[in-house]
Every structure is written in C-alpha cells, then in structure tokens.
Image 1 (cartoon, rainbow, N blue to C red):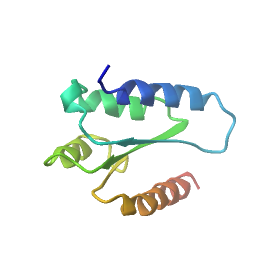
Image 2 (image 1 turned 135 degrees about the horizontal axis):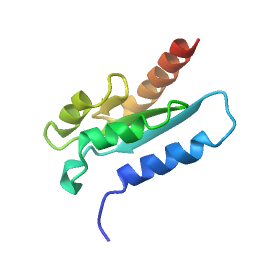
Image 3 (image 1 turned 135 degrees about the vertical axis):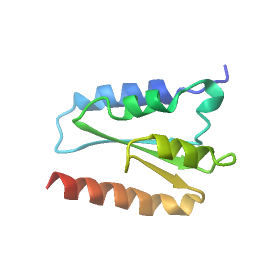
Length: 106
C-alpha cells in the first residue's frame, strides 16, 4: 500500500544502531519532506531523530513541494536537518554532518 514509513524507519534504525558497538553512530534519513501528507507531525519526527543520545540522527530533505522542506527544517532541532534541492549537494551535506559531529564530540 502507498504510505510513508519515515517515522517508523527512523525509530527502527536508531533503536537497532544503538545496539551496535561503535565509536560513533549515525542515522541519516533521506526524505522528500512530504511528511504532512501522511499526518506525521514535525515534533514526532524530531523526537524520533533525537530518541537516543548515542545516535546522531539527521535528515536530508531532497527537493520539496513548495516550501515544505524549509518549513519542516525550521521545526526540527538546529543542525539536524538539511535541504538539498539538487542531489549534487548531498556529498557536501554529508561532509558537513560528519565534520560538525566529530568536532562537537572532540
């Protein structure tokens, strides 16, 4: 069936990854930012991204219908979400995520 499993997938990934032995844990969610269509509130998605302090959760919103990605980004914790209107931006965004996380944990 059609639907969006962003919230469930994020919660599952963070829960499972937290069980793994690692120096750093990252979950990076790629989404079209169309969560509103499926009744997913930004605060619930923010809670999922930050549900385990051992796991660095981030979202990259690829493209956007209107200003959905920008509106969603403003409601999520600062530095936890990014908007890529072009997929060529994704490598730079990933570099920014890893660099900022490593600097803040040093």
